[in-house]
Image (cartoon, rainbow, N blue to C red; front, top):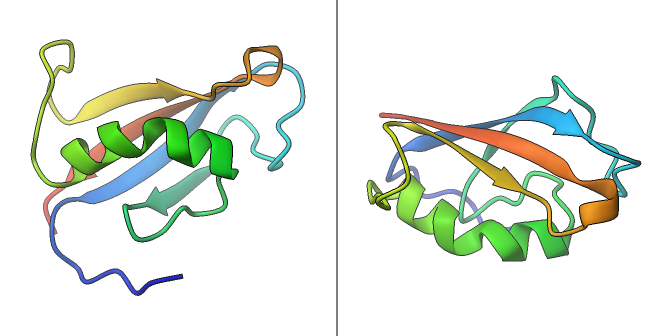
Length: 91
């Protein structure tokens, strides 16, 4: 894993909900730091599916449907879906 160079926003992920059984073992209430340099234990499929949003979010961008410094992202496995709330804060 690459070292996080420490620029951009700090992004905290909180597991809001799980449906089924998460292959990576995430459970509602889990909290961890996530970045473009640190997948933080997310499975590759989930990390890959949110990477574009994470990149924009971590480096200060926004999309029209985002509101402020919190967004929700979901695992692409609809049978075992994990919903994360990402929150960004200035370093």
